[in-house]
Length: 422
RNA sequence: GUGACUGUAGCUCAGCUGGUAGAGCCCUGGACUGUGACUCCGGUGGUCGCGGGUUCGAACCCCGUCAGUCACCCCA
View 1 (cartoon, rainbow, N blue to C red):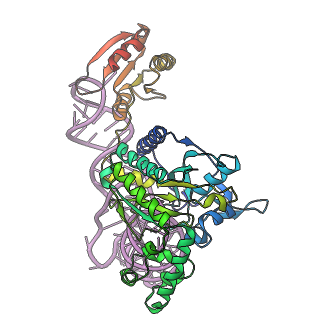
View 2 (view 1 turned 90 degrees about the vertical axis):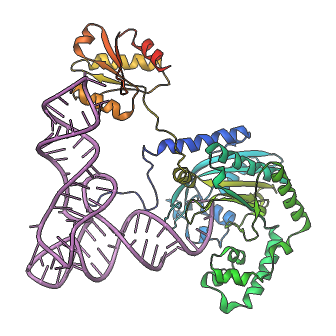
View 3 (view 1 turned 90 degrees about the horizontal axis):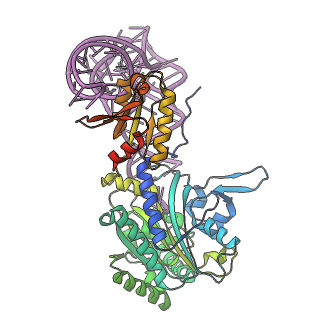
């Protein structure tokens, strides 16, 4: 029988890596707490219709990347490909949105059936932040400042740059899309196959093509900025002022078009060149029409999501991994004293509840147990052997090259170890 | 979905134009020792991703398939 293995693009995170993941998660938790955001949790599985309506019927995500299936009732369900849709559905369903302001965050796995590559996986972890009921540019700025705060916490701020763009209201974008289509139709023979595919369905996405020929063609194309309303421009300019006041460097990238349909007005991405082809670590923007589009009362909103794998990769390539946690003590258990050893371990854990206390289980001579204690990086070995145990004593050995050790009574071992660990 | 490269012990890799596999690390037994690490001696561990084909003979050549990596596409 063939060996069982993980689904393609779905990765196991092994003990050697979990401390790094925990560091990223904890940093994120500190930052959202600092900004007063509340956690929301919602299912990984939703009606397929939710994502179709939120993300957009003609986006790559719903056209070819969703894990969809019929359940036993015949309902078509999908694993969530992103978080915003589910967040909006949950918040609206429970009445959190109407005439209210909400600052929410979430984290969890998302699923997209794409070909895996560096920084892109079929199951991936996202941190997301969504803010509802705030129309002004100050909430947009707050979201960006929040993300910048996380880069500071992770010490990766210097490796990231902020790009922003104003993509206007949806009506404006539609008008611009028609103008762009009209322009490109005149140069139809020069379009590559991707551009042809999107010419009518989603012409804006041709803008961020990596094909130099397309970019050359687009140089003379109509510009989105010319189709955006004065109100939208004013919002965008106010945001730039707020960012400058907040000490956030940014560049306006007129080709920045997000892949999900629900965005409008200002959008942003944090990008890096230290991750290969997957340069976007965090992306978001306003989505003022989405709540209504999903059946709620009109509610303005903005948010962003970031890819945890990409943050972890960045920390690795930039050498920012946290040190592996080390146990405080390893109890070396001599022959015939395993009951006493377990009792000692319990006493130590009660006295030092925040320390890691390992007790050797199973056979093995003391020498190889000590070897294991060193290998785990324990600070002290507590050696409990039959003869000393009968005398009510054990040895505490410091696990460094000096190898200092002292004999202490079983009763006072917790206090002595506590003093040593100070 | 497309392309390129890769797939030999738990890990990192050798294996010359095809003659049925090796090293280091890890693990483990012993010697030495400050009950670990260092040094020395020994040991466990592989139907060479899988399935076909060519051949007297395939880890090596051919086809297929699966998986990995990177890139395109797209996105976090």
